[in-house]
Length: 444
Ligand code: GDP
Image 1 (cartoon, rainbow, N blue to C red):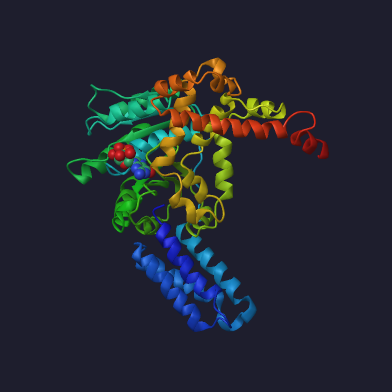
Image 2 (image 1 turned 135 degrees about the horizontal axis):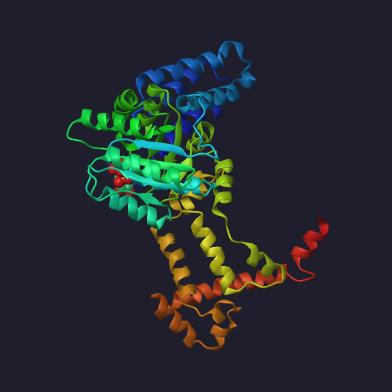
């Protein structure tokens, strides 16, 4: 995550207090606050916000009036709360209402990730039962419509745009009217991010806004641009008065503190964060969850929400397990479920205590191996997939055929078979009338 280093530095500063032998005094607190301030400044958080955080923590802790045995706990809590306050505007984030057409307009500079975010948003709300459509009103950038069209088609989201109409205001209006007529719940309008003159860009945004009357305007802000984020957000706020922010590229390696300052400067809540180029690399933003993750405390709530929206397919496998069976098809279903979860690094960062291992997990190599396993199983016949794998041991030529068909090595196919055999062994022990699953059920 973009702010992982910042999290490490703050943790280090905090542990200098929590590990201190003897009583924590004013000097220890000051030293810790200086360390935290340096870390925040280094990550582009604005000077004013850092100064405020420091003063607030000192005020909250009040060393002289806090019993020595309580000081460490009080300091930890004050630091956590003030870090949350940095990104918390105390305002509720807008939500579309069911039973009517909601229009969202996305604004932001070219390259910020607007078009990508449009599709991510559409998929996010589609999964939550909103009939969603996308409108491409970016006529300035050649290929913008193609990009939206491609993303939307892949994500199975209806879209509207034009290769011939040069006026973005006309397209936006036509698209929104069409989707409204077709009773769409949510209509997302992508606008242009570049013009020869900045003023032209802002004028166009206002004109589109007047034409489609959005219920909500979202600003898409690239988190990796550092201090420039604050200026950019302020300029857009004046022109388009957006209601919330989407911070993109939070997965990159650049500093992200500038974006935090932008939030503070415009007093606008962050609604979502983008954590990668993939459609599902998109999360709702909550200050507490964000800071918990930053400090490596985990984000179980986020993980639960993530898993619930994936609609993982477990039914048949559970039925099979109860019967003491685990077929190759079961292995394939479970592999798909794992892949739906996203990179392991992301899952790990949401589990308390696992955050420090996140960097080591889910790299290119493990993703490639997961995909190879699915290709292997896709090259099997129906009969093979529904088998317990013995068919391959009886006829080894099948292994060679599957390896060829899936473009993998024989060794990789054998590994998949070994994995399934191991799971089948476990299923045998767990399933059946006298198995572990039945006994556990009986105990409930
Ligand atoms: P637009 O010009 O504002 O519409 O920006 P695009 O949607 O075309 O995005 C610009 C580039 O940023 C593309 O290469 C995207 O794949 C990439 N991008 C967008 N969001 C994210 C994100 O959250 N993380 C990363 N790593 N890349 C992103």
